[in-house]
Image (cartoon, rainbow, N blue to C red; front, side, top):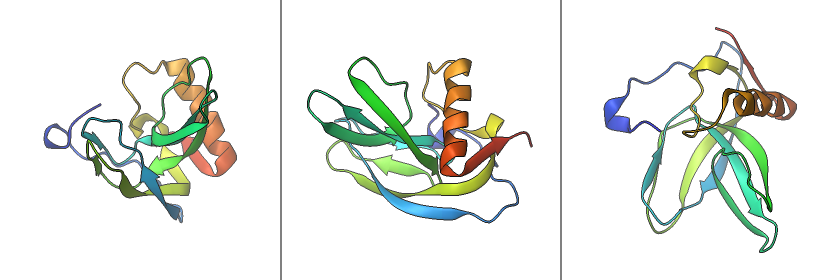
Length: 126
């Protein structure tokens, strides 16, 4: 992931009315910054029924993930405590400008883009 101080803000929205929703981004025990345009999901660990919300990462064994939308603003999540942020739950976005977790394969990104379409976030070319 890029840091706020080292990036140029990407333009990832297309000209289409948007719908936003406020979500609580979960702390992971380390301070973290998520950039506008990051794909957001909730992840549930099946064994403990623990759910966290953050940047989409491919779920591991014993986990499930549900895509929620695309982060509308930069969000700083403290080491302790959660952070509130707005996400787009209905929008048209430029797929190549979305921000993904490091290490997420192109195939996994394409699968996530298809899932985003199901919730109302349409990703395509510029």
